[in-house]
Length: 107
Image 1 (spheres, rainbow, N blue to C red):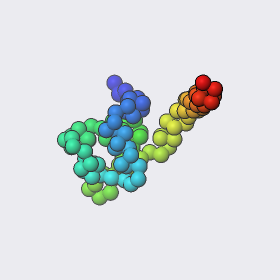
Image 2 (cartoon, rainbow, N blue to C red; image 1 turned 60 degrees about the vertical axis):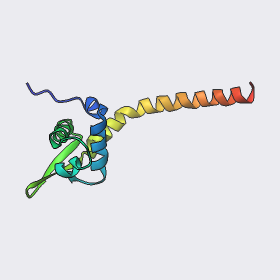
Image 3 (cartoon, rainbow, N blue to C red; image 1 turned 45 degrees about the horizontal axis):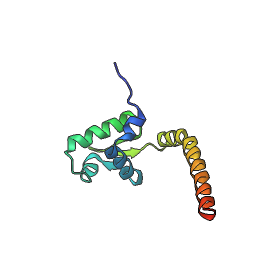
Image 4 (tube, one colour; image 1 turned 180 degrees about the horizontal axis):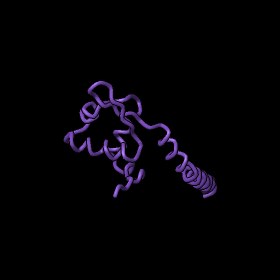
């Protein structure tokens, strides 16, 4: 049975988020990515596998090297899903800020 991993479980891990931030600016090989972490290369490879399974990263082979690229379309899907929640919290914080300012002005 081939179950696709959940994208939000993948994003929950701080190492995977750090990998996404690294690869967001430029495509990198697994070795170049692993050089940025104090963990064993197989551990980084497992994270890369999970991110690729979730389609957050895509692979491109150039000669003997495999480069990892951010999948902008998938990241946009995630951002689009999260946006209504961000708006909700922005509204709540704005209301709280207004209440606090009123309280400070009229103690």
